[in-house]
Length: 235
Image (cartoon, rainbow, N blue to C red; front, side, top):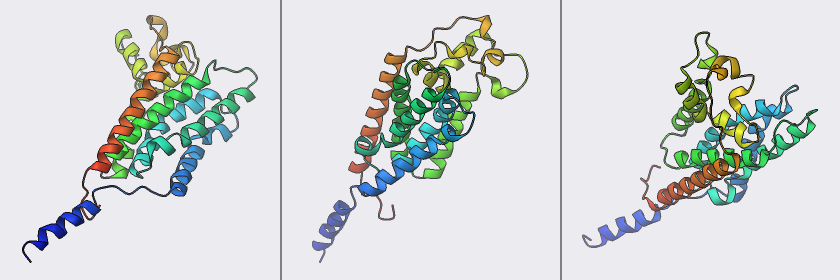
């Protein structure tokens, strides 16, 4: 009996060593649901392409956390939601009297990378709600800081304002999508004091490709590590 017991424990440990994948239907349904939620601003009358980009700059990492925590396969179903967001942006910009974005495809690659980065966080989380809330808060802070959260007062010093613009996901998506310099966008110009300094905008193709590559690698690595790590019986 003493020799049999360790063997049974080892067998049990091997049975729970890998995280189960949700079904293909469940994974596809979750991707479509988050894709619809991310495209929601496109159905609001008066919404323009930049409004959708602002929403996606906040929503993409949060959606990634939810996808990663659900244990979907990032290489098979990770791009379902970002693809729907791309369709929404193209349709919204095409319906405008004058298209405002020169390269929405690069913007789509950039927010796909942000979504995959969120997946890497979701793949390691123990609390989906906590991680999603943390991602939502951090992203909102990065978006709102350049304009001081719309709080009246003196703008940031030029060097700090330029750095905060570089760190903003909204600025990233806008410039990757073809906006020449998001610092001159109406929502940022006065609050940031853009006329006080010069800033080099993000290079759309190179930046979007880099964000996508980093996001994909992180999502794949953390998903692989999670599936290789033994889980407790209650997980």
